[in-house]
Every structure is written in structure tokens, then in C-alpha cells.
Length: 148
Image (tube, rainbow, N blue to C red; front, top):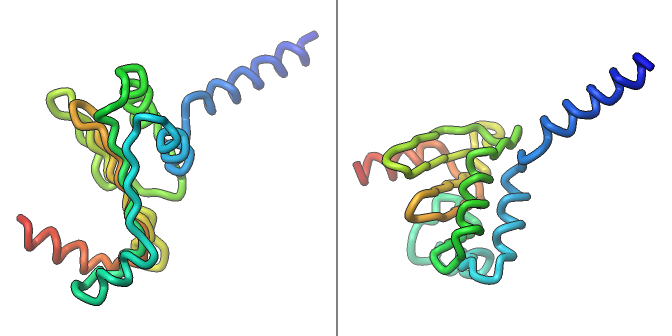
């Protein structure tokens, strides 16, 4: 009897710990399939053509999700997903809350190269921006310095 109770308690903790926590790919896939979510993808050939005219700094793909046309239920679910987002492959660089707006910037780094940068916003302007490629940290610093 005690073994059964302990087993039930362990299962309850495992289920509760995983409930509501999603990784970046799960959040993106779930919400990009929503009928009213606006998805824009720039990658492949478009980025190669852009590279002919401008330094793309190793960026290979950009995905943007915008929720302006979504109902309040979808917007609230996305905001909740951002709050509960846990992805062991990513490092959170910025996690800011101000005046009902939440901004989270996460990056995936391997061998001192940024392979993915994700910007998530909630509040009035809900959006998810994913930038993939092989981006040097020095390129990010250069952009920040130019626009500061």
C-alpha cells in the first residue's frame, strides 16, 4: 500500500513539473499553425540574395510570428507560454517586465557562435522572432553599438 502511495506521489510530481513547460520549437510550432497568426519567413534564397547587397552577418533564416489578428484567448495562451518557456538548449539573455509588457531574449550558443536568437514579446505587441544562422558575438555588439 505504501509503495502505491509513493508511486502516485512521484507520478503526480513528474506530471506537475512538466505541465505547461514547453521549449522554443514547441511554442513556435503550436502558434505558427494558428489561423489568425501572421507568419513571415525569410530564408534560403532570399537571404543569399540579400547577402549580395548587404552583409547578413551569418544570418540564414528569420521567422516572425505576429498575433495582432488573434483573439484574446490565443494572445493569453501565447503570453502564458512565454512565461513558462523553459529550453535547456537556450540561455536567457534578457527577461524584462515593464508596464504589463514582457520581453524575453534567448540565445543558443555553440563554440562561441550564436546559432539561434529568439525575441519574445507580450503585452500590447505579441510577437516571436527567431533568427538562425552562425552569428558572431562581435556582430551583435556592432549592431548594438550602432543603434545605441
